[in-house]
Length: 221
Length: 237
Length: 51
Image 1 (cartoon, rainbow over the protein chains, first blue to last red):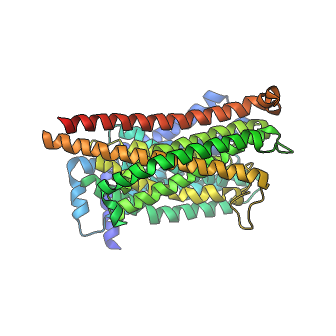
Image 2: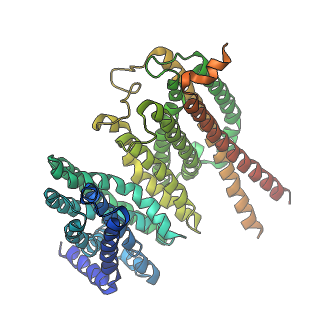
Image 3: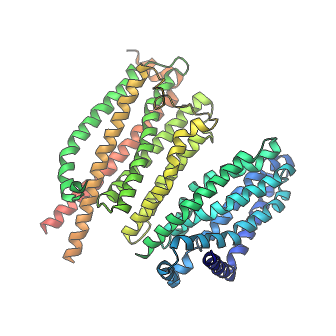
């Protein structure tokens, strides 16, 4: 287990050293959300209706921005080959990368979302379920994103390809995430949706490292 | 299975099979269209609009069926490295995308008079749209790399990841409150659809399947010929 | 056979006929694409094998 912690620490150090991701993701998220009242008008009732959806979609797009750089730097400078040859299973290394990615992108998004919810007149009952849903959903986004990033590694027009691959797979997370976020204000329990999000996370934890590792090995052949 | 691994053997087999497949497809499709337009009765609620069903439902079945085939072929290609598996998958993908497109478009044209809307984001429609994007992603990925075999393997992995969508499509009308009507053919307890409608439906479905089979064989033959061409050019160079 | 009634499709003509039309279009497009690619490959292969 300490090996995994060491792996994650290394990935985290690299991610933070690059610096760009954290700032990019948070800035994009904030700016995109703030644009909505300008685009559709400041009427509180209207904004409140779409607040959860807007927060989720922009969080998703922000996460998408940082995915290209998940494996690309290692692929470019040759250290990916070292990772594949290392005694630690590649799947575990992928998991460590995803965790570091989430700590630098998904977690900040989850923390900032309720603050941005203020700008969108998010109903007060929804704040807790929004944060819980994002806490469960954003790691899944990192994991599914890792599959896409590994598949599109080294491709021509990799950015567009990555979006095409990843966005359809993101849709279930989005659907249940928004449903969970909106449920409380409608007087319903967010629990079923949160449980489904947890199930999606569990499935992604099982599936994504295998799929991403298989793609990475394919990229190096 | 190993006996069919030989491309030359496949070429001989498909050359013999293809004309029969094509003829049967043409006959069944003609019969299907005739039955759907002239013989099948109008629905007591939907009137003549129900005739769209005879295109919409078979293309929906094909959309899912072809993806299942794609995923299976991809698995066989990745795990057992059968030489024809990836070729079959890549040949099937555009056909599956075509059927999915037919399903979505005819569904829309059926939905507007019946439900009053061209589109609704319910579970069935959303998951079929996701299926369409999975097909597009598969095709894009397969062609996205200079090293062709890298693209083929990456697409195969994507195909397997997307398999989770198939049970969602099938059971979406059971699991969620949807506008789309629940299963009336493939269900425990047998079909609930009237026989006078079931038979044209099955004839069309069989016609679609043979149409797909014929085009799949044709596209696989083309792929093998292209591979041979590349090998010859490489040898001559 | 009352053709006028048949083409009217009980008032749903503007949905039924585009549906059938687009479906046929897609199927013909798939067929044409497959046939063209096959003919092209066959011609190229024959040319290569002759040379």
